Image 1 (cartoon, each protein chain N blue to C red):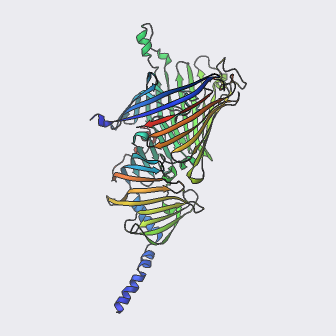
Image 2 (tube, each protein chain N blue to C red; image 1 turned 60 degrees about the vertical axis):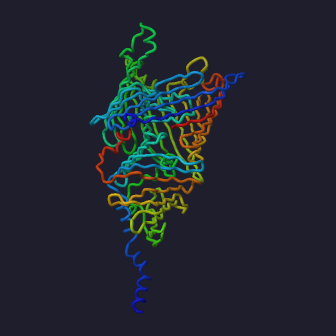
Image 3 (cartoon, each protein chain N blue to C red; image 1 turned 180 degrees about the horizontal axis):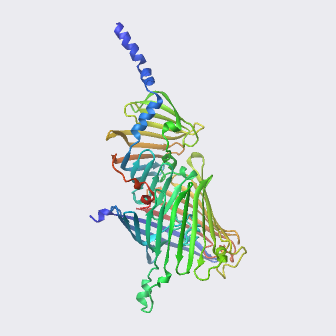
Length: 350
Length: 245
């Protein structure tokens, strides 16, 4: 009876990767990733999900990517557990994402979703009409069970490490408008943000955020911490039912560096980064994709070109080639490990 | 003898008389009266055919009137993905990414899950008579059923298709076939319906085939397993809250 109220799905991705690690060394390796998801689906007022991720090679590394319960009460709903939360606007760059950061953390440029991060959270969602809602969030630091069990001197996280905030999403004159705030406990900073999304000839989005230290805040910090992200998206129908999709996103940090630095010896943050993407939908099952991360300041780029072929129900054939264009001191460099790589394999969802 | 001649004359004029007895506007009004349902809950599936084979996608939808609908996909690959269509907005929700996307502009031309249907096909809040000039072009048989052939031409540019031709069943006032054209007269979409059943006094298409004429070897079949109409639906079901639940 319980089983009838649960849905199970598995996404299995099996890839072989050929990569150049340095001038004389090429690597060829196989890696599988799997996500097993159990969802409670039949209860009208309670939903639960447990997703187990595994990376499989000679041994396996397991992770719990989702473990959450959602409960709907009259007038609001609550979510508790390790869940995905998506604030702001943006496929790759999103200054409104004050929780996970303005740049997508995923290094897998072949993934369908470049933002898939989850956090331990407690959230309350209050609908404010058809197109509006208020969401509050409490992000308690996750316990490091391994450290706690291995070392009795280790203490659980301090309350001051907690993050908390809220956002309001509404529609103003046809523009999706989102404003929110997060108190970042570990950084001891206030993080307000604004995001807008609309359509004017092309789909567009714009987000801005700042990070203001709780101690001795100064007006100058507004400029220093300002992150702006923007994006445009357009689809162009071509002949014979094929389509071209264009996406261009940018992250602008005015106070970051405008001059080239040596990224091999220091952490580098440049004032402008771009994410151009072009995909050609040859038909409903075959797409050719070109995704890039471009650093205009040091003139380097991570270029990923590939094929996504949904050949049978649930099955995709994936094939991607990644090239780092640039010098060794740039963010991306031809001579860096993985300067060129080819990945091919299957993904099956069942 | 005179009686036979009289009957023959009557019979000769019968079809033109019956065409002129009803106007194109009346046919479209009767069609919309039949096809617009106050509320409905539907359990169905799509079968998408292309040159590589077929793909089945199951769904459950709630709808209200002509322009409000919430669809939730239930098959493994798309499970939990939802589409909310209201009078002037379309939103998508991807549960794994917890991502809420408003479909606008060119994005509306994207295919729904690789089918022959685009998001644009789900838009349109006005009645056909508000959006199109209509003309009755006679009676033609489609799959053995006499149908009114009605042509529609857009009054303005805010509709996805400039011209449509509908073959509307004379008895059931339900489409048997629809062709949709661009302004240049190019055929863009073809719809055919071959399984119409009566549910609570409404004629409901239980099987429909949609073809995007620009795609080779591609078609999408829509099947209804079960439908309940004129049931009570909480108005809040058509909101971002329900979409993201």
